[in-house]
Length: 59
Image: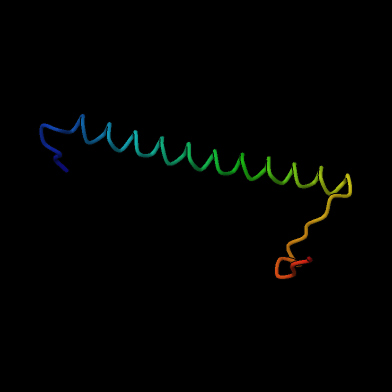
């Protein structure tokens, strides 16, 4: 496979793309773990979720 005179640019572009995608995946995974830890801490303190009562408005 011959990539021509621009092989350095092509390889660099793919390398940067792979790095960015892997960095974004790591960021999402780390954020997910942090959010689960925060929710676990809140649930241990007795804070509950109220998403089931979203339709009710008390006046």
